[in-house]
Each structure stands twice: as structure tokens, then as C-alpha cells.
Image 1 (cartoon, rainbow, N blue to C red):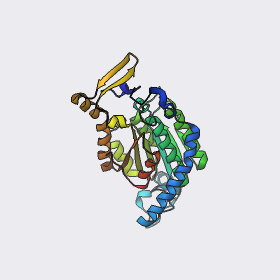
Image 2 (image 1 turned 90 degrees about the horizontal axis):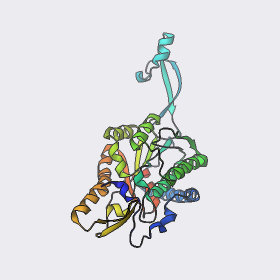
Image 3 (image 1 turned 135 degrees about the vertical axis):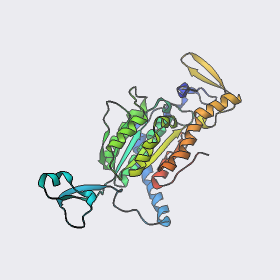
Length: 316
């Protein structure tokens, strides 16, 4: 069953385009989420205070190169500067200092299946809102933020800190999720690009449709999670997870058609196409070091912040 067939559902009580407020993300709305991110962050801090020690002010596990000097007894042999050693004829070692400003990179999937929704808002709008909340939460934690999507000719949004960094990322998310880009190269391409850009200790937040995960090899997730904090947010729609037992009408370019979801075989094919990939991702990716959460279009968007604090949510 092709996911693109769900481009324009016509459901009882839905009224077709009556959901227009949730079809495209509004910049003002994404900017206003800063206050919500701040409240969620403070609530998380209160809960964490009872759970254990406070986080370190040093960001991530990364080490930043400072200089090279002559090797002395006791220096770590793994940090030998081989180029300078060969050039001078004397052994030199690299000196590093702890990286104090972590990078949070948001990778946006722009697959066609995201530009769809039946409850409250489109999945693309929920993705934009989640990305905006992540950006605001990241800069509140002192991170620099950046963003990219799978696009052959569009450069990533460069890392920056503070409100300026968050606003640049939010504006990009608004553009990407306002309408489906024609040059989408896929999530696998975007993650390959991300892996080349990231340094150890960074945080990677992926906004993706569950169907897009099929194209991503397992070793990609393992490699990313080995050196970075990886969070996956999966926007989904209630219709995908629990369709009504009825003949469901859809508007298509060829006219109105009905899908007999009251038939067991058709319903099973539907669930295999939509619900199964989501459940599989939530079960398998945590075993590869990825914190994953399903975020329905009718749920509060701030649920997406839970995995940033270590929580993992499952689909019921």
C-alpha cells in the first residue's frame, strides 16, 4: 500500500480543508514556543533534582584541539602529532581541552508522507513544532544549534548559539515544512551528511517519518550513537495507527475512492504499511543506542522534549 495515497483524506467530521490552521507551520507560532520550552526545561530540572546529580557544565564528550608541543614521558601515544613529528624530526603530541559548547544538529526528513494529517495538524507541522522546541531548549542549555535536510544543493544551517541560532533553524524548518520540497534526497542522505559534519559529543535530533527509516542502514544508527547523543522524533497520525472499521473515503486526482477498512485483509495491509514501521523503530532503535519517541499529531508537542532528558516513549 503506497503511503502517498493518503495525500487528501476525506473523513466524517474532518471537513477536508477545515484543518487549514494545521496544514502549514506559522513562524510566529514556532517563535512563541520559546516560552513553552523554557517552562518544560524548568519542570525537567525540578524532577531531575530528585533523581540524581546535576549535569556537568562541560558539554558532551568532545575534545577540542588546542596546540602541539614536544612529546614528554607520560603523554598519551594516541595523541602523537605525526605530521609535525615527521616535519621536525622530534616527537610532538597534540594538546586538547574540553569542549564547552555542545552542538545540537536537527536533521529534518522532508519525505512526502509527512505532509498529511487528520487530527489537529499535519505531521509536517508537528515536526516543525518539535524542531522549534528542540532548538529553543538547546540554546537555553547553552548549545549551538544547526539544521539540515536531505537536499543536493541546499547548504546546512550553520551552527550558532543564542536566540539568533534558534531563529535561523526555526525559519529553515518553517520553509521546509510549509510545502513538500521537490528536491528531497531522502533521510539516508541527510544522515550521511550529518555524520560527516558532527564531532564527538554532539547531540543529533532527527525528525522523521517512520517509513523513511527503511532506507537507513542499521550501521548508520550504530555509528552515530557511538559518538553522539541521538534522539529520533517520529511524527505520526492517529489514522495510521488505528484506522476506523469502515469504508474510508479518499479524494484523489482521479476522483473519490473508498478503501474497505472494515475488511480484515485490507485492514491488515494498512497496519503493515503504517503502524508496523513505527512500532519496529521504537523497539529496535533503542537497542542501537537511539532514544526514540512517537509523537502523534493530536498530542502536545512538548512531549518531544522527554527523550532529550533520557526518557523513551513507546506507542501503546
